[in-house]
Image 1 (cartoon, rainbow, N blue to C red):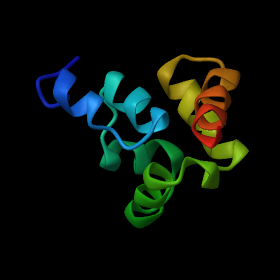
Image 2 (cartoon, rainbow, N blue to C red):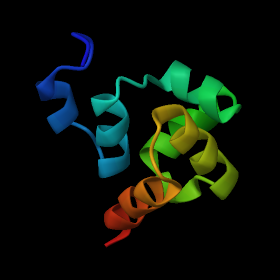
Image 3 (tube, rainbow, N blue to C red):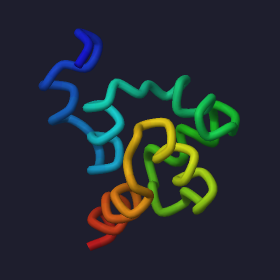
Length: 80
């Protein structure tokens, strides 16, 4: 974990999806590059993770070295 993403910032995350990204050190700019979307779209994904499409979740899972089901479960957890 980098100094940029301290435990305080992780706890202040708006949702579990954002917290997962902060744990792995993924900034909004990096998220937009990984998902191949523009910066404004990645901001919308952070505020409302249910907007993330399957292909974007797949790209993120491949980048983080996770299963796509882990990303989907994190997004679904916020819906409940």
